[in-house]
Length: 171
Image (tube, one colour):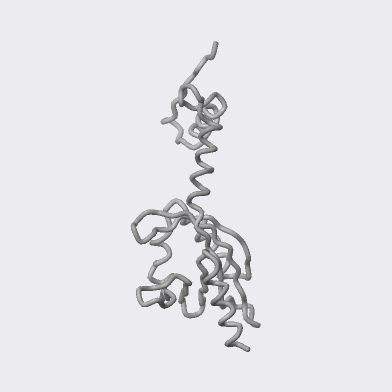
């Protein structure tokens, strides 16, 4: 029965473009459906201890990713997180990770599994749509509402004494 389930899982895995992850929280071993040069599943030992994941995740996305990871390895959790990870070429690629973590009978998290889908094209399309909404079609500059939002965000986030203001009067 176990053999049949394993083979079934392998067939489903091969039919889906997503990358499947299985993290053993006890031994700090991450297994991925990505294949190495010999065609074997990729296995990363000491992935947290050696900061393998930290080095792969884009610095801007790491706080969100690590917050999810920390929550999932301390209590059973299920969710979705989007992040950029470094690809073999050195470029960053967007992923959407659906994950779940599981505890043993002593409420100790023993496994975290996930399925990551590459969504770079989707993110680029979202950015293009956002640009169309925020930019003036004729000048290519931020429109009135987008300019106001950007200025408010800047003023809110800057330190006292170094803020600047811009007054524009549209006649």
